[in-house]
Length: 612
View 1 (tube, rainbow, N blue to C red):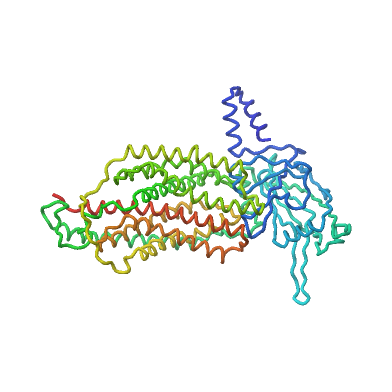
View 2: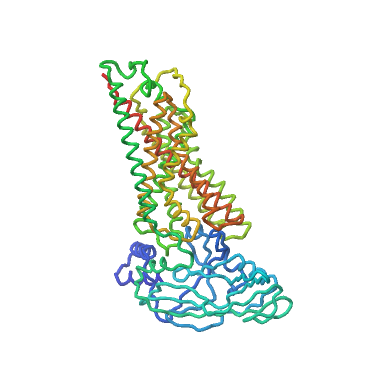
């Protein structure tokens, strides 16, 4: 229908060239052009998936249940994002025509065996819900009904919904909204060893005959097609958990601003006193400073001594820069309105494409800095950079996907999708990493250090307990985490729930605050480290703020136990597996930001010393 309308538009414009036709078709299909129906036109209803209500990522194909199904199942062509989201849309037996009401039309009659009755009963007891799709509008409903009542005697009733009422809203020639209800409908009881049932005819031997029916009612809506996403957003089949807690968000913003102001003011006052004390000599360069002084000045010949594990450090910085670019791109695409509730899996598709395209960023940053700090094995550095995140991702996905495949879940990716993703990395991601690495190596200059490094390293004095790595990691990880703790709940409720995230403006502000806090805390901790005459700041700056990922993973455990009702092997494996990867992404991203902030700070303070 969309393609036909696009072709009509092309012909009306008098466009005869093939290239023009392709351009118009692409614009039509990806700009959300309203599908125009005429009265009596067929409106296809796709069945999609079913799954436990409390396990959003544990989903199965709708036709895995003993329900009405066509003799030959025709699946809808899906985008990459829809497949990754577990969608498996197929045509249904429901015949819905535009603006034509239907009253209790028979869908099919099924003779359920005892095994099939037990299968339905088990699904209903696990609170299985279904998802249909009508004109890109998701429709949700429960498979059946369960009631627990009384203590002595205890009553446990399980019923199957065999009649569905479809309520569809329209405006002009387009569909605006659709839902399903079972109001004033009695469920068919599914008793143990089923025989007779209300609405079904027992056929003996524990089997059951049920008749599925449906009704369709059309209602006119004043809402235009361009705003139909608002109608779906206001509808609540699932509980609304993403209420905007403005007071909590403002409180976080105020605390973060105060924290940043405190750190900046204190550092400026301390550095001013340090400069006044250190710049008392009228002659001598940076290498001739009084060795009798103490503090960060005395280690000027060691502070730029290159760290161990250069290749790993540069790989962390490169992948962190890649994810920083990726996150910024996703947020700005969301602000531009490229993701909405009617574009299934759009964020998944965008994330995969951006991850592949931004691989050049990781290769460039890693190999460029690796060359600056006199790294020799640049080929190994490129390989390490390309596999630093992709290897854990592939390992985690292999475990999670195997469990989904074993359980028959639609979250298990088809072989064609796996080959597509593998091809995207092999043909796009890895080559771009290599190209970025080669460009970075060739364009890398010398390392800019205000002071020369001596051959013999200075002995580091014994440090007090509060300057140890673990303490700095606790401080540097907790403060950035506290800045995003409120928004983190919204993100978890979106990723591990069924909510549609819409607070992208607030997300951008919180993201900027997170990076600012991470940079400021890293600078402060680096200063305290150098003040104790400890010049091992390279890895310390990465680990201090990068430990935010550990706090995020701990929060994910808290969310799983106290904020969700998820359970079972399938859901738990996916949750904790991808939560580990999420924590790793935050660690790499914040570790990279904090390192560059610390490096800029150290260069500034040593360059500010008087040198004649």
